[in-house]
Picture (cartoon, rainbow, N blue to C red):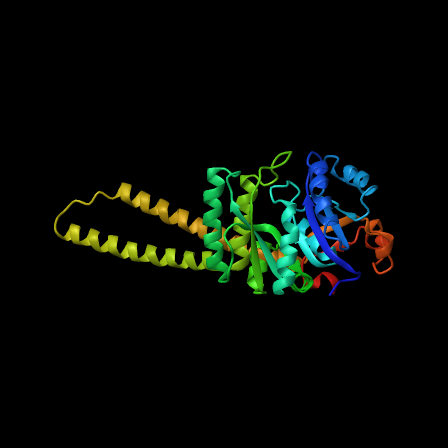
Length: 342
């Protein structure tokens, strides 16, 4: 079940400018993983940080041999960094965790136990309490999950973010998908593997500032919709049909009024109608352009990220010998898609 080694668990942590939180992360994560009594690795993916994240990780590795650093050449985005970590993980089970400690690492043993006892391929970390989030974020998150469940058409727990445990079979299934801009919150439930849930209380960010401002949340929502459904294009069709119907009704009303000798004031209503339908047309063109742009990006088959460093030699001596050479992997382009290795 393990890919290239005999590790029981991999913990993948995408990071971008997280120097402030790293000491706190190690203080909480390492005792949890050491307490499992099993072989593991922590895959810290530095997503092109501009601060001292990579330097601090190198220092931490001196006293924590299970810590593995994967550095991306530039900032490629959270989902791309998560992809890099998943693709290079070697554990029988893989946990994805953000570095900000809003998702408590103390839940990992419970997730692992649930997966093994019930033979599950997915264990979602579900936020049972989001009091640490703003009212705006809680409300928009609720709307997001409602819409996404309609799109995916499968069970998608409320409050399930990127904190989850995946089996090796699940990770390999994700690797086989040719997604250029994967959204794992949708891809994971869409595959339909057996799943369970572990509830936890979401905490406040331990240190530093959020790396997911409103603009990135909007981008994630747009990626989620456009990558998984053609519903916006169908909505444009229905808007066009509505426009035709409204035009017929307004025309008939105007003709009847004119036939009865009523003076019909036209310029204001005509201007508003033209403005409305012009705006609808521009929105539809924008949606069409977004879909065509995604197709163009997929056809280009450009790598989603480039890796500049992978410290695979950092694992304990007992695990050495089964992993590909680290220098051979350094600077290799890695593409999120089935064609990345073909």
